[in-house]
Amino acid sequence: MVKDDLIEGRNRETVVLRISSVKPYSAELTSEQLEILADIAEQYGSGKAHVTARQTIEVPDVPRNCVDEVVSVLESHGLRISSTGRQLRNVIACSRWCLYNVKPMSELACELNRQYMNVRLPGKTTISLSGCDFSCVRSRTSDIGVIARADIGLTEKRCKHCKVCIKEPLGCQVDAITLTDDGVVIDRERCVRCGFCWNVCRPGTIEAKRTYYDVFIGGRGGMRPEEAKFLGSVEGQDALKALIQRIIDIYQANAREGERISDLVKRQGMEVFNGRA
Image (tube, rainbow, N blue to C red; front, side, top):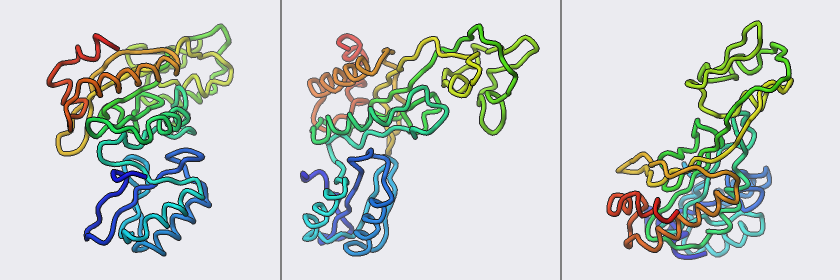
């Protein structure tokens, strides 16, 4: 644990602990871990906890002189204190169970969290991984945002008119699919390439011709929210991880102390990333 892991409390004697899971995954907790968090909040804090936008659990009002003891308990149950300040914030992903996922992103988020756990950056940095265009984890307002895509096509297998791909409340959320007597018709203008129809099509009439990742940079929330700018697309997680590493390298090499990626883009333009990514 480093200094940036602690959030100052409302008085000098207490701190707020921001906690995530090392295993199974930073945004997923086992029932045992939930019990441990409840015990810590009750024994050391005020009996309350808060779920953050970055998929962590904050326990407030923990006495400063008890932090080492609490950290020891957390670590023995697969939990850790998550970073704040100028370290990379908790990398988040949407639920791995969602049928709209082109590809589940939680394992990649876990890998990135472990890789960059204690890396100090010029400023606050967030990475959000979306399994589809709905962007439930706000990939378009993160410093680095990723959205998985699928180019949908049709096979020669006959549609059985089961209507799962269009049935409410699930089904295509942008009305891009129509069932005719001849089978499936996909409106390419409406399609957002989320992959839901491909995931639920049991006859195999609909397939993903290609999957890839759109990468955005320079988004932010907070007091000066900004939408991220599109940087480019890559195929495969190895290429995606390499691009994320290049973005971080360029950011570290060019940003001033305290600047976020959006600040660097304003000062030097997208060319600083486009020319070297």
